[in-house]
Image 1: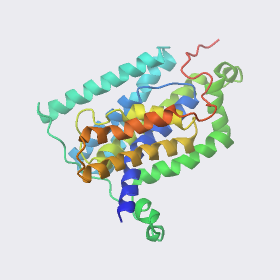
Image 2: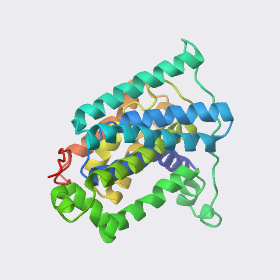
Image 3: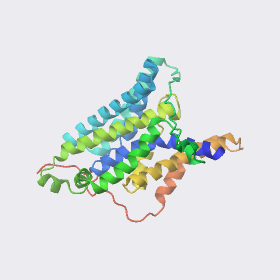
Image 4: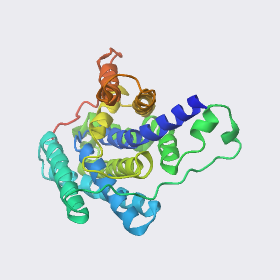
Length: 304
């Protein structure tokens, strides 16, 4: 029973990273580097918490998170894809704006003390028959809808990027945007669409954090998870299956942190809080063969 609980917690804690990283995978495959995914996640988390708290419905909160993430990503697209702003600077600005805006609104609505919200949570959905499987059945097939969404999107994106015309088109934008434009592909429009979808997924990652993983909202609740999602894309070598592995690694490391704290070891708890981040950074430092980053990633595109 302890193993099943550990795995189930790992899936729940890994899902916010998985959804945000899958969205960032699409964005980076199109040739855009959005380090503002942290701010998009935070905006989605705040929108999910506020609307779920006001409406009493977690489903409404999930929808608000997706819309908010999409809007924030479109603002980033306006600055970078349309106006040609530097992607790193625009992403950093997005993070700062999201952190400041959510903090100010949170305190304006709940007072200077920032009382933690108590939110409705996403219900668990049991999968008949599969729920009865030993170990994995108990851990995986009684999760909330966003866990299933992340797990289903992974093979769809893996297949789509490798074996469909849309996937080839997206990869062309990231590798050779000028060549893609010469063939008549609307580079700016397609990159904007990729950013919109990626932002929506990052917003859903924020919703998974507030409405399932923590069941509350506090200022800066993402705590660097957006940057972990960026690292997971690199760790996964820009593949959907690699992203899944990296996100689950972070989720299981976070679950292990809680196991250590529950064991009441005579070790400062701050060391346990560091564990998921240290483990993620350690994995990134390991040699893992040739990376397959898009060749035009982060480069400004100018129409000839």
